[in-house]
Image (tube, rainbow, N blue to C red):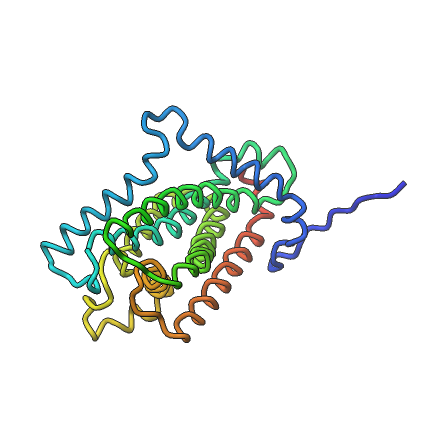
Length: 272
């Protein structure tokens, strides 16, 4: 009789891609459940997806565009801010939703064996569904404002992937830490909020003082936002080194988050 021996990975080994792929049905099942439950028992349902970026873009257009009179690279401030919110909501949505996923599903995690990393990764599906709906509205706004971004709009999936990787890097690591330290659930929203104002989401890099530009240049989210706006609004393209640095930072950040998750996963049974 053959025996199946499950050998736990080393503390600093990356999660097995093979195991994750073999359990992909679990990933899809979790993701589908999140999508279905997200707007159940709500009055306006999926409309919440577009109301949030619309409201945020409207407020930013008034505060930064009219009151502060900041530049928006020759496009209406409202759609400039909306493009920034599209990109930011992918990153922040993945980071925040995946961070609380293990705690929210702790009864399932403690009873059924499957790759635990699938739980935070499964939240990506719901975020992307929201993103696609909001992106559809953005395309309508492009026609309304008469903006033609040209061929760079074809690169939107590339920038979206990088946003997911950066968000998942924070979310996956935070989800593992939050199993033991619930303080993360209180601190992370603050961190994400601070990051939003430290990243050119609601304003242009043109508004940043020259002596502070170096701080923005070391923030990979800056070039993520600039890449999105190039593809969505036809603004100036990021330089090759900026794109390369963003790709490297995104991949390394995700690998770092996965390593932290793998190291802490062994202690889940003692806490959950």
